[in-house]
Length: 212
Image (cartoon, rainbow, N blue to C red):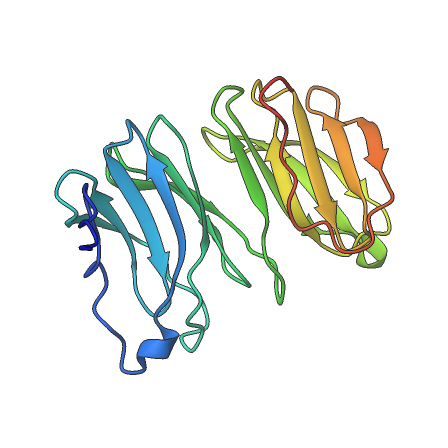
């Protein structure tokens, strides 16, 4: 029996191999805008945007880590409107507009930790993390358009947030971290609505269901 060849666009040569091929790994890939482009982040490579139709790179998205020896790429979030949000360990958060092909703004990163973030284009919001008092973490809510902060809440007892996501309508935000708990916030007021306990380890991922 012959194995059928896969159909559709393939990106096998998206990134040239590094000197040590074991270090070249694609860490994140997201559709952006109208779905005709994909943003890809890989070790030891610039963040690139590819055409879904041709499989060819069409743009590089500027992101430079402050430590030149750091080879891990940033995390990626994208929006249907064409924004790309990038942020990684110890590096700044960068918001890039693929329509204007220009950086919209950037925010400070977190020293020796991962800057977590989530985007809600429906609500026009960007959620980020920052160090808080007594090794806690601050959950900050910002305007997606310009990065302006308008409220923050302290996740007491949690030294880092590993999970962060908006509900589909952007009215609620969930976070999770090292304290083995997840918290649901009301976006309008910043109030904590629920603390979800009973997890046996770090809450590394949390998402809302489609119905909220």
